[in-house]
Image (cartoon, rainbow, N blue to C red; front, top):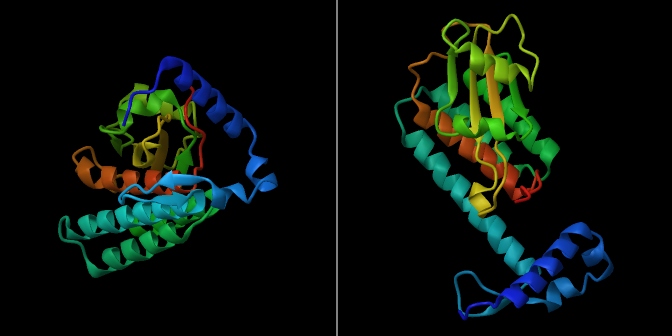
Length: 224
């Protein structure tokens, strides 16, 4: 592919910004969805904008299925937990808007982990470090500074005796730059989440949730 000169790049950025700011454009000119031709991501042929979007959705669903297989393969889990995870993933993949994704996440993970509270906190730059190093442990184990940061975004229930707060890498599955949100799980059981819990499993769940939110474009990309 030939390099794009700076002037053309600037013009294309203006067009992209205008389209983002004018969501009704393709409603008024719906015929363009079939007329605009894009390069197929895996084949040497052109496809419509609608076909490209369907290809993207299929790819993302395949990625969700791949991660489900990895999760079920990782470690030994009892049948009840496996069944709950499968049911959760199926519901997550079937969710087609932000509200449905959030319901699937909250009800499904509450059942899988048997906890009293599951929440998705809005994107915030302060959550960046929690993507690779989740906040996890009993209320006694957690650092006061981390709990204080969490308290700026959500009301901490006095009955919560252990918690997990893990950053959701929004935009990662679609190659976009976005601030991370946070998946919060809280339990009245002090031993439910401990500081020595493996972060791998938690990160896998966080990436699945983030990918589901990316698929339906739940949040706007960050402005650089």
